[in-house]
Length: 126
Picture 1: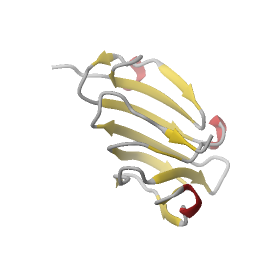
Picture 2: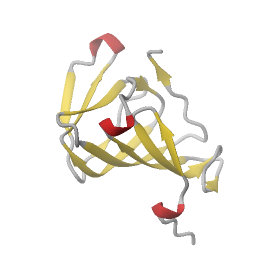
Picture 3: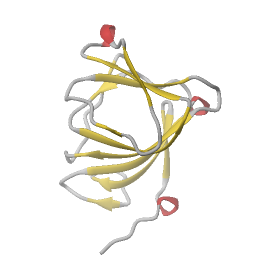
């Protein structure tokens, strides 16, 4: 059995977030061919997150403060919103656009993300 401690996993910066890549193919602590798992912290201090979509993602909210997810079927139609709180589980539909926003400068959302694919293919508006 492996027990992976978040603080033992290298921190990687990305637009609007920082990641600890636990399982996966590229740059993960444990290389695997069947899934991806990352700890992710989104916050205004890391910049503005891009709206995006990808395949088969599950997100468990470890903790959150003043965090909102905006989502929709297209980039132009992300008019649905939901406030996030500790213990929530999100499952965007495949191809559903989403973005995390904050109602305060010290807002954040801390996730454990799982992707049921060996490589995550992210589509952004850029």
